Image (tube, rainbow, N blue to C red; front, side, top):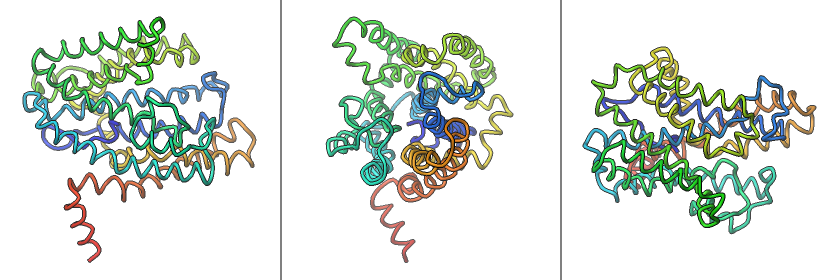
Length: 375
């Protein structure tokens, strides 16, 4: 996801993006702690002040916009040229697959030997194959990890990214984004009446529009002088306000049932906020996002996203629930235990399965580094 994209910038690292990744991943962890403690989802039977934790799905919206942005920053600096399709795909595979496959194995072992995911049967050999091939959004199968669904969506977006850049280069950003959004809206509108089109909803097609929006936002890198002065964060607030009002008025049950359309409405606010952070505004927010703890959290946010779900389930179901009253006591103790366990385990996991693949771009480089360390 946007979690699994190398750091990019016009001149070095873009301040704030790592912190944004880290906070979004942490929000997903908090969301799952909340879900396990108040199992009425999408009905909110928790205290009202915790209701915002019901919407962990929107962190994935941010990830998808961020992913499109991060991948497009480098092409935006070079006339929207990708630099070779084969190179792009090999780098994407090198970046996301080793930690993903390791996390899948970790999740399968826990589901088979300790506890499966809530509401799921123990995964089968078919589950391992489907998830291993990143086809879980196409073929149904017992899930070993409730967070892995979005990785398949992201991988499929990588397949169309070169085509997005081609269209963007030939006819412009507005036409590309408009065309992708029009196709996505047509799918959403036709799906209730056309069974063949409804099958496409399994692919979460709204994320294609969000991904394209992130790529278009990367154009600010190329046009820094003319766009950097604009108050993008205020534009983001203006775009977010009506969506927030809709969410509050409509309620969680309606929002969850209409994630397709709500995601499309949230996308512009996410893209504008990202554009603001990328251009250094608002300054206080960027400074907060660029503090060392948040940068560090962002550096292994992909690993945190990948492995936290089985850990949260084990803590909640096996450690907390048998000994603590349900509801708020369960929630607070789950937070107190599962968050540090997940963050610590993710850092260790990333040290082996993620960070080495960021630092070294080939098996030869990685082997040489390991041998040098052993010596």
